[in-house]
Amino acid sequence: MILYDWKKLYTETGKDPSQLLNLIAFLTYPRIPDNKYDPIYRWAQKDWSGMSFLLNPERLLGQRANFKDLELAEYVALASFRSYADYLTTNRKTLAMELSPVDLEFIKRNRLLTYSEDEIFFCWEEVTH
Image 1 (cartoon, rainbow, N blue to C red):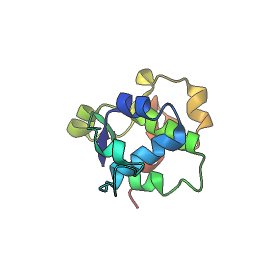
Image 2 (image 1 turned 90 degrees about the vertical axis):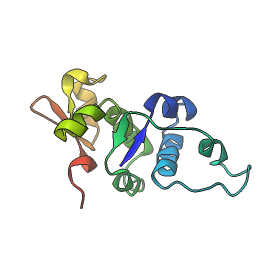
Image 3 (image 1 turned 180 degrees about the horizontal axis):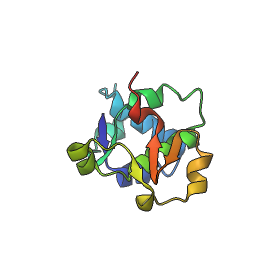
Image 4 (image 1 turned 30 degrees about the horizontal axis):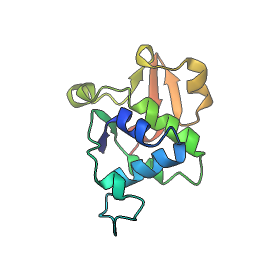
């Protein structure tokens, strides 16, 4: 699991889905930059912690060859609207539709999201194998 501040990630990556996923990869598999010219140097200098969470970011990153970066970035963005406090108290991994900033058509268009009984389910958050 990783915790992150969605607004910081969104601002830092300039709304570029590829850069957003690179930053998620850095948060999932942190490493020390080789030198100040290393592309991750600027990321290593910042605190990215926040209340947004992904339970299985490794699974998401492992699918970059099978899905467009935009689709994966939309998954990360929508997951950031879930309540971490809800997850800690009730183990709820879904997002209530009324808390979603996007409409049902958006959810149906993304292959990584499922809608059922007024809840949005995230493909790799429910299954861990």
